[in-house]
Length: 390
Length: 163
Image (cartoon, each protein chain N blue to C red):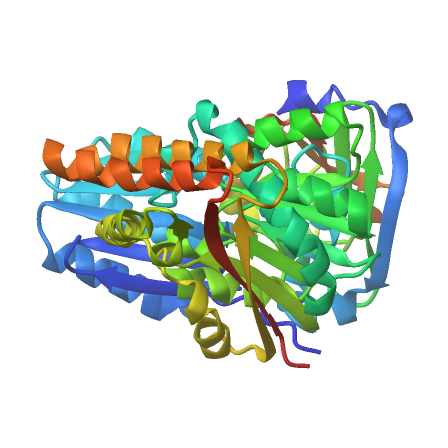
């Protein structure tokens, strides 16, 4: 029986003068973590100014490790009172701030900052409550396709399932209703989105979904416990998708599957006005790239899953169009994109008024195509899944 | 500590699960502390509005008490880990045989000391219980369990609001 606790890692990033501790630190004695302690000690000795100790992905610690770490930090604070040490904790890990605050209380040159800002680069753009109806409309439109695709990717009734980066929980609610999983955990890093998800579940009398506030890149969920893990439209707005995939792999049972969806925004299309629409969505891809997001990720899904260690990979592509139900729904989505991409992101990037005007035109033409009686407008999405080997 | 400990209400708690094993088995691998902690914490998290976070939150305190038991027990004998659920709190109880040795500082003020633990635990044990009680808003006590037994009891509020 393998009883080894999930290992921890310690890494120093000299660019940011940041020590990063992650994982689970539960040694029997301080000797077991001597290398990590040595790195902390050496870093503090070699670097001046502010040193950051980032523990936001440290999910567990015992007092043996904490005491050993505290001793080094405290001794250093005393011998070098000019030195500033900032400990960065996570609001996700509920014990972390209180525990490390005990150190800050006794050392004036040591402080604790709680990491609670948007974890995904794109999260700030979509967390606004005004965006929620659009997110729901998007899910309504993609669900028509995914409802049919999901069984091909291994989803069936009665599985133990997790929806990571669940957002406002609408997909989880649909899965709960349609596939009746034995257990469904829905995780997101937005408290506001989770509050909304809980309210919707309560309104619809949907019981049994376990909503959890969490960091998708270092989840508090155990290894090997889910038959089916979904992560939709999120890898593409995460600046380190391979890190997120590693976590999805970890929590998936051997033999279970991880299902992801991503877009290729530059392939959004429409007629009439195909050229202006094409230009705008190519610019969308560049705009996201500026903010470290890759909305061209869809076709790369197979590659990403293979690199993460999955086998039996399946990839599908479907096109959400204005012919899927009410064309106004499609048009509403595009208008919401225009507001966020042209109205906020392009402005934040510092784009010129002329650029933004042209940028907006492509969205307006896309709406026109969607609502035109003979028009056609599309939004392509890649759905892919891989099996965690037995 | 004493004030918190006086708030215990044994009658309002319903047993959830109990795990019992030989001390020799328990002490054969340090990683058993982690494994038992995670098993029990998962169960404690059930029913909470955010099971994963609540489980993780409690696991740090529970692990410390389980590690304390690991360091405090001697073979032979048996050790049990039990969970109870009440309306306002969840309880972890760790019970094991007491050794007839001089004591240790694994005490919370006003309670019985815990014989059998090594002298190295004296200061750490005292600090530990105080810190854990504060950080986890828990009531922790260590006391005799019958003539030959000891028990570590921790009550954690069940209505933690992490937001």
